[in-house]
Length: 328
Image (cartoon, rainbow, N blue to C red):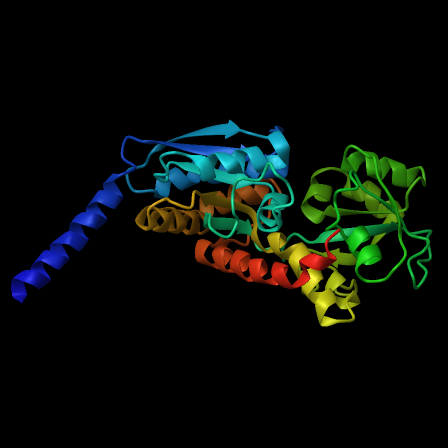
């Protein structure tokens, strides 16, 4: 009996040692599944996290970054799902829409399943960086929102506040598409071609918050089910839901904001290496030097641990089954 216990302990110790030695001399490849722009907050977040995370992975691997922007981040995420050898040396940081699309499976290009990927962590839980629906200050919004001219980049964005207000919650905003960037929409608002749009507070602070704040005001918060303390009088989109089904839909459309700037590895990566990467992610989030660098670049941090991200995805995979008949 004693020999058996000793053998089990030795196996556990050897497994731990092997796991801790695995990354020594290896190269950690980080896929940035977004548009290529060194000044964009998503890419900055990813590169800063990558710089620090290798310090906390036993064996201190080197790091290399690879931008794979094709198919709105889907191509980069497909890479980790389809790797022939999933050993934990490739991590993907996909843009927000990738996780929700991997639940919906709304395109034949999607070859991954968000629910089976191993999520490593997320830099933000959404509460520190609200999405805000702005409307021009000279517009007195009607109760049915029929005088809201909502500008967006693409008619495929059915999960954005404007389409959700119109298609799910029963309001009547006018949806105007075709703009290439948020900056184009802001200019269109100044010209009064549109009078409302949605953007993240962090993006606005990095560009022209003062200008937008002069002629527009936030009327709805998006990306969290709680009002941000900076905007205590601005209701969340959740507050416009009248039925449980509507509330489920609103919650589903926003769940990826609760795990913003997240990271994942393939579904077949060994659990001990997933655990190593998750711990390293948390350690970075508690690193004073990392936090100071993020603060200097106006990048909010409210990290979500990997197992919690996994739970968020699992819960919303189940929620999707209840509301998928409403998705257009």
